Structures are given as structure tokens and as C-alpha cells.
Length: 586
Image: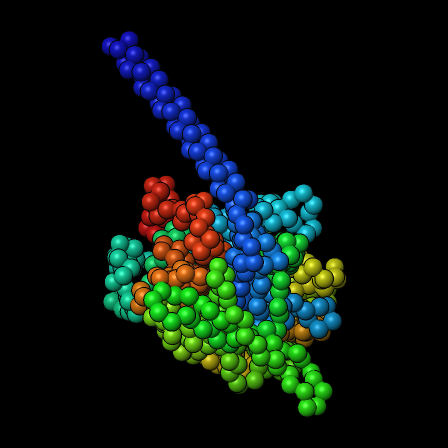
């Protein structure tokens, strides 16, 4: 009997070993085939004659810049034939970071990266050289930095008493669990115009759970945000479910995203000869009559700055497209209409024009395949929130935060004051956070979601507060004594609040058809990129979404057959699902 069992075990082991060998052989064959296809594709591209074909890219954010990089790298398109139009005086779009140690630094938002789900982002930036580490790519630079500075938040949620809460449990009851499971199993096309609150109307307890407070503030969801997008996040980030309380899945850049991502990408494009026209708005597009969708002209408005009396500040021009030219447009921007305050001044109560959204609206009015921007940009009272960037002399304030949280700068993540009227959160990055930040200067960033509510200590809406008042509210939530607050305020260089009226526009409830396809049906030379196009299974409000849309646009318009990195189906991986279930049942 023992001998028989031994034979069975030996046979099973042999079969398993054979299976492993077979899998390796198949993987090698797949790699060889992929390499062969890449070689053929590259040879085809190297032999293409583009003549005088031009590529016009509207918007100077990450999506347009990524599209230019794909044109140069994968299509061998001459950089000198690529023009990027940007209405502002700086590139980067929502990947921003500016200021100095005298006037204070500012980041309007903080872009979270993720190693597991940013498939095309990492692939693209593996080709972009680092500006600070010769011989390394931006991907290597970021991942090496992140692995050396792992994230493990020790103070994810704090209550009104200043107590750091135990968030190892998600706080669900069985109704919450069933509602979440039902949402995951529901076809997203049945979620048209539904909000998260609509979905959980029978389980209001859900909005009191640790999970909701952490998921909401990690990704900036509101109760009135789209159930559609919430479901996408649950599926795409399901592996994050089991570690949401520590945010270990957050990937940090060495500096802010402008310095770490945009600047090296801009330099790569400049070296390739790409032309940048800043302070130049595209105000309208003309489409050719007849069937299909072909852009034939762009209307330009150049800002020449301060002019002598009697001279026009703006120069208007028309750029006509020839046969073979392509146009790629960023449709909408989450930082449209953003405004800044400072330590002593609140942000004025006025609305800036949503330039990018306006252009998309004009285009959509001319063609039915270009989506419905009205669904995203018509309700600033739902889509607005505020950030603030604090700059200090010395590290006294950062030390106070460190003593409270137990996290040194760069090791924590969001700390949320769950009972604060503004729903305040903050994060302290590794220092320095800016390329031009001196050693003796420190900074950190925070944001509030409920900006129309009166503060708990400063009895006025966050929307109407100066930078000083916002910081005072924040320090009181840390339960720092008045004496220490006075001392800390003496070290402050500036607190710059930022009001962003449409920063959550991509989360607005919508119909499945409200987002246009990257390359609309019938398009001959036109594509859309950015956060407001439709990419099946992927999630908006991410760097990956911008880069993936750019890759899809370029490959489709230019006839590139190389596969695009797919959305990794973590929601189908048994280990990931089991870990998520275990956390949900805790």
C-alpha cells in the first residue's frame, strides 16, 4: 500500500514538474512571438515616409504629452511635425507643482500612483530618461524610490477627540456586505445616472463604516458620485481593499509629479524636436462636411501678454489640416477654473471659465459621437473641493505631525479627520518635495471635501477661508495647545489654498454613452484623450487613464498593431478575492 501511494505521489510530482516546464515553454514562446511582432512593427515604422504630415495635440497635460511620446517612440513620427497647444504658460495639466521658498510652494492636487494597475504608465516611462539619475528611466527612479520609502500609514482615521482609530476592521454589517457584492455583480450599463447614495439607500449604515471614510478620502468620492465609477474602482483596486487602512499600495514619486513626471517627459519631447505653443488656446474646431469625422481646421487664440496701448493682447489664427494630418484633443480638465489664495487672502467668489470643457462642448455640439460634457461640468457645487499647501521654515510643524501620527515624512499617507466639518485630510511627503526646495524649508499638502460647511473651530466655510484660517482649523484638529499653535504659526512662510470647481467632474453620475470613445466611430483623423473618454474596465482620476487613452489614440490613428497593456484582471484572481473577502468579513 505504501509502495502504491509512493508511486502515485511520484507520478503526481512528475506531472506537476512537467506542467511547470510546459508553462515555461509556452511563456517563452509567447515572449519570442511578441518580440518578433515588435521587430516587424518597428521595421514597418522605420520605413514609413510621413512626408509633411503633421500632428496637432490640444492641451499640454499628461495625456497629450504621452500621445506625443508614443508618436515619436513607436511611430517614428518626426518630432518637429508634432505641435502641442497649451492655454496656460506651463505644461503638465493637473500634474503640477510650483512656487519657491520665499512665496511658498503649491500643489493643486496630489496624484496617487500604483505599481500594480499603472500598466501603460510604467511601460511608457521606462523609455523616458530620468533627469537626476543618469542611466535610469523615470520608471526605475520612481519604483526604486518607492521601494526604499514604503508607505504604512499609522493614523489613517482620527476622531473628533484627536484619537487615532483602530481601522483594522472595515466596520461592515451584513447588509453592507450584500449591497457591495450586489454592486460588483451588476452590469455597469444598468447604473446609468445612479449615485453611490442611490445604491446604498437601503443600507445607510454603509456611510458610517471605516471603509467608506477611507475609500472616500483616498480617491475623493462623494455620496453623490457615480455608482458606475465607484464600481470600477472596486473592481480595478480590489487588491487595495485588504490594505486600505495602511495605503501600502500607494506608489510615491521622489518629488512632486511635475518635477518627477512632467519635466523629464517634456525634456524627452524637446530632444525629439516636439514644438510647444504655450499661452495658446484652441477655441474651436471645424469638421469636414459629409459622412465620417474629419477635423479640417483649428481656431487659435494666442496670448501675447501685456501690450502697449492700442495693441491687441490676443492674436487669432486658423490652423488648417491637410490630408494625412491628425488631431488629438484633451476633452475636459479637472483643474479647469482653479484659483489660488494665500496666507492672508481667501479665494475670490468668482468662477473662471472652463476652457477645456468649453472646447469639448463646442465639438460635441457639432457631432453626435463626441459625448455629453454637460453631464460632467454643469454642477460645480457637486464637483468642487479645496486643497492647501503649507510651507514652513524648519521642521517644527512637520515634527508635531510626526509625533501625532508616528509616521516620519514620506512613510505615511492620508490622515483623515473623519468628524471634521470639512472632512479634512493631509499627507506629508518625503522632504524635499520640490526640486528647488532648500533643506531648511519643509512643506505638506492637505484637502477638504465639504468646503461649504462651517469649520469646527473657524466658524466659516472653507471656501471663504484664508490660508491662515485653514491651517488653524487643521492644527486644532490635531489638538495642539494654543501656545504651541502660536509658536508653529511663527514658522509658516505661506499657506496657499486652491479652489477647484470641477476637480471631481469625472465622478459625476452619467449615462454609459456620455463619455466619447477615444477614437469616435467614423473618425478619419481625430481622437480624444484624458479623463473624460470611455475606456472599458479602467478607472478615471488616474495617471494610467491619461496614458492609456493616449496610447489607444495614437495606435488607432496611426495603424500600430503592437498590443496595448491590458487592464489586469485582479478581480478574477483567487488570492486577491480571498484577501478582500477576509477583510470585508473582519
